[in-house]
Image 1 (tube, rainbow, N blue to C red):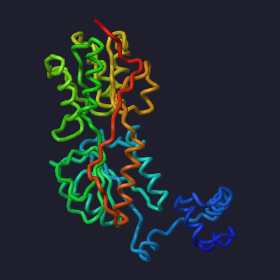
Image 2 (cartoon, rainbow, N blue to C red; image 1 turned 180 degrees about the vertical axis):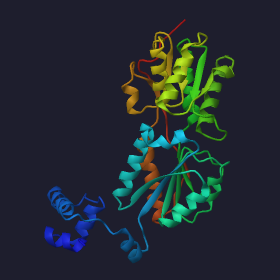
Image 3 (spheres, rainbow, N blue to C red; image 1 turned 135 degrees about the vertical axis):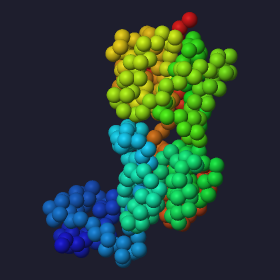
Image 4 (cartoon, helix red, strand yellow; image 1 turned 60 degrees about the vertical axis):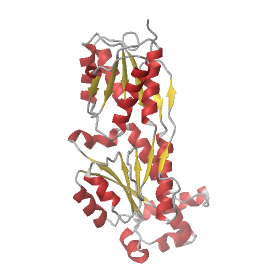
Length: 339
């Protein structure tokens, strides 16, 4: 079996240099040396022995990102552009410090404990945790670093959360539509669960209506699972109504699906219906028309989550356990002034 020593000998470098290249710590290694070592690794078929290293150092360097599955539709979470941007930023930051990111979808808290134990995981990332879920109590009691994203937790304990002012973002989006003359605005979102991001965005939407003297109409709230077919079907259903002029969708992906369903049904955006999304994923600049949206920085959120995790893994204190990143309204072409 090929070892690090074999690769170092063939490349004419130290084993430390080879280790740095393997683990992505190449800032102090020349590009030429990186190429040489990488080619030798490829030719010799070297695979790092994580088990041996774990026995020697008592560290696996494995951190898990857990996605809580509640339905079969959520099994496609890896296709969500926002999730992938955030995850890639987390992975890059961890890799540069010699850690490995393992992504796992889990439905039960018992399954989570078995997974963490079997893989000797050293830290956990989890997006969208709810206090009402068994997962909360499981993670709260873990003797390892836990970093959350987009979670509304009143008692974080030793956990860290990276989130947004979701209420304010939704209020901005809805107010923008109202300022452009819209009075009947659809609120489109995934399932509205108490104590989460979507509920906060619904409250922000309601607050903007109330501040402008507009009544809240529950019939304008549409909940939709994140599948391409269902999002487009939602747009087609909306196209059959003539008592609204705008849609605020709580995610760009949902906004894009609704826009497609509307336009395939003959309702043009923004001529007939104005649409605002949330996230500012790359797709928002590729829709026709380009999507007006509320920007959050997924990559920055991922990097900040990774930085907090690395601090916790190193035994360093984290000063602020609930960190809130800003949002910004980005005006493009999917909103038309009426009235």
